[in-house]
Image 1 (cartoon, rainbow, N blue to C red):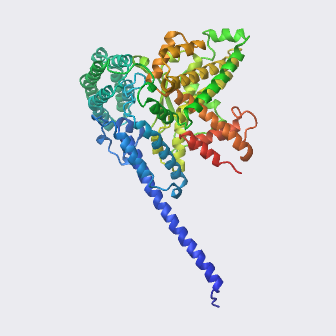
Image 2: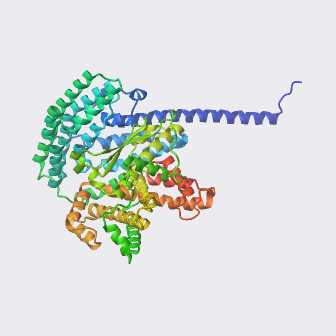
Amino acid sequence: MKRFLSVRQWLITLVLLTALSAATLLCYGNLHTDKEFEAFAEHFLLQEVRANPIQFHYTIDDAAAWHTDEASLSLPVYRAGSAADDAYALSLLAEQLHRFDPEKLSENNRRLYELLNSYTEALRPVAAHPYFSEPLSPSSGAVAELPVLLAEYRLDTADDVSLYLNILEQIPGYLDGLAVYEREKAQAGLFMSDDAAGEVIRQCAALMDRGELESGAHFLEATFADRLDQLVAQGAATESDALAWQAENDRLLSTVVAPAYDRLADELTLLAGSGRDSRGLVRYAGGREYYRALLRLQTGSSRDVVEIKRLLYSDLAANYAALRKLLQGNTALQEALASDSALLPEMPPAEILNRLRADMTGAYPSIPADEAGNPIGCTVKYVDDSLEAYSAPAFYMTPPIDNARDNTIYINARDTADDISLFTTLAHEGYPGHLYQTVYCQRYWTQTGVTPLRGVLYYGGFVEGWALYAELSSYRYAARLAEGVHPDAAACCAACRLDRQIQLCLCSLLDIAVHYDGADREDVRRMLASLGRADTDTADAIYDYIAQEPCNYPKYYLGYLEIMELQKQAADIWRDSAPTSAAPSGNPETDPDFLYFFHSFLLENGPADFSTLSRILSSERKD
């Protein structure tokens, strides 16, 4: 029998249909907003990586998948008077970003929105002071960085060789543009010190040594030949192709690249004497505001400077007291630390990395497998002799976001002579440091539908803080490894770790003292001497580095301390609200179950600024 709905049933049905229609419209609207935001974010991030063909080649393996013709990309060339362009571009970006309502985005897109927003907000006050930046810094500038990037440029196909040779032809315009920017810095009274300029001038001559180029012994000739040999062995090129490319590479290095370096050196020679003294940013108009903004950008910490100093001083005092207690009355330990005897069994770098991978098991989640089940490879190389004086103790070459199988770590033999330094450096750069964190994040994003282009956003405090966190943790692994070799292994490793922390914390405080409080060279000498930490020459070297590289030490050490603060926050939250397996049963720093959950949280939500991470962590509290 046919049944008709009662009035009440009609009303209920109408309400349900209305609710369903509204939900459908809301869902459609949110989906539309998500698609629009994803297009916006992808366009912005792709534009960032397309701005430099070298950066693009390192970031993207399959250019076609990202609708990009690599041959159309060119090195950025600075144009006179364009220093303020970045500030204007960032204001436009912020305006476009704020048109989206984050509440209407999916969780993944809302997280990306928050990161883009915090990223642009941190960049804008830095971009408002365009002439404080130093792209030719002796320690990390383009002069020394460019040859390393060229030496590691991937050559998988004949097209890659053409791209590489085309980039060599563009280097004169790129370096000439930097010279234009340096002239404008000089006009603004912000050109580098004479000592720094002299160091960069010497780099130009040493890195493009004419004798090495003429004899075919230059490392850019040798590394290029090695990569061509691999192409020939793979059947991707013929012997005659390789010989022709090698000749063209040699010609471009000698007649195009080297003269460009010479011309830059000449420009810097002419500008010498027009720059600032080797002193902190606070001594220049707008310098304190710039430093404060740079500190937030580089470290990802939103704390004010007073709070940061308090955090650093507290850590310094605790570690200093712990080291004193460890050494007091322990003459055997003091003698062991003073001796040059090996602490660890002799192992090549590859074996050390394997050992570290095994040691971290249990406290760190496994790297997600990719769809093809490819293993993760890593090659450890030593910095060429000609680059040792200008290179960091070690560095990790970040792989493409769409192909993290092959990884490279460079070691500077000059700075990793002893066994414990090599072990902890490989932990910093490899496992569980940069390599592990980078590959884990890339594969996790792929599995969870997050755009891998998110990796274009650089959160230095998180990335370097994580690597330092991994390095400091590895002293415990080293102690276990050294037990059979040295009777005081645990105490030696603990003392080495504390000494490392004291050095980095002290240098972070000096960074603030020089650039924010106005400490001069004599002040730094007195501060270090009062702690018995350095002679005059060493103190001057520390002062010069800090003057040239503001916020670099805090990027590492404040980043590490922020991670430790998050660890305390997680322990408090999970002790009350999380499953038993996540709550620490004792000391959070040594509880493997707690550490597993904490490391998973960081890896799945970073890299990010620390305010964002703290907010996400707080949202996990179950009241």
